[in-house]
Image 1 (cartoon, one colour):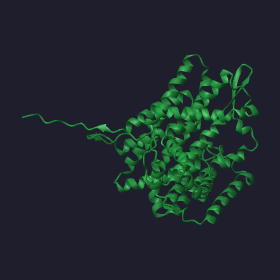
Image 2: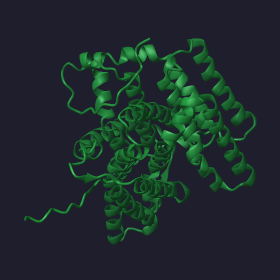
Image 3: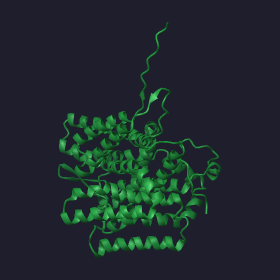
Image 4: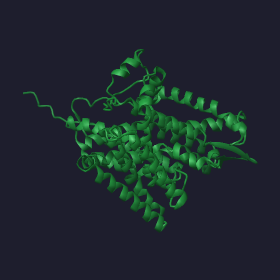
Length: 441
């Protein structure tokens, strides 16, 4: 079995000609890189098919064409790949934290670096959307319509709340995982079940927001197990059985007991226990396909695409939905695409539409990807923020992104979110030490 250890390394869009040789000698787990990029591709593809505009007299309506299809709910058992994203994130987090511990990095400094990597690329998007939408209001566009647009383009921001919580708790749960791995993941699953049970029996949906922490921490533990080599040591029949049992339990909970919706997108916010089952199935399938995926990562086109998208994955994730909405609206208003969403003519326009989305994303990333790349090391004399400031920044960022899940992203909430994230970034930015120069004698 190939070495599945990994070291975090920055990559750029300008890949050298001998990229295959460099990849072959790399100690990174290239399959993890491929899985991460696959998740990004899947998210962009699904959202490209979920935005449909139509005319209703003099008004313009919006519909999700996928949800009108009978097969869509069951298709989400494959298309809902966010659990795999958190598995991969758990793998990368475990590798990064273990490396940080060897360097003597404190948990608060580790959290600070992760917050910077998450919030820096988010702030330009938030500021851009805030300015554009307020300009639309100033130009006379109906405020209700602007709020609908804000809610649509801000839909992916829930991910930042979930991922921030995972990073904040990562050093603690990793320590528990190191000493008692089975008990740790079992406890997190049990807490997830308790929260779901309380939400379902009480009918208070807000209780489910607790699983924004517990469910994704449980899925993150699968990434820790991946980094430990636990799945790599399992025989193939056990991996196949793990995936089959997970999907069987999913069928019981949805089709038989009707405890959860069949649609895994509906199970996303608030996060529910079925996402943990999906995570188990997806990581087992990933390891079943591991030999084929390793071969795929020896192909130069696959490597180039993986490294290009992987080096700007957060930028693509954050900006893809605003581009999809803007492109859909522009084409619809121009009259070039005026077919009924979900019709044969509409589906025929999807391949060029998706291609156009990716071309725009690639071009845009050249300008904004610098916000995603690691910031320069603090200059000599810089003062590292204290642990309290870092945790306050994490709490502020988590709160505003979690609010989007509860209430949807209105124009006012978008404005508040942009301001809060700017403050959070300032809190985690190094400051200058104040020194007093001695007076000359």
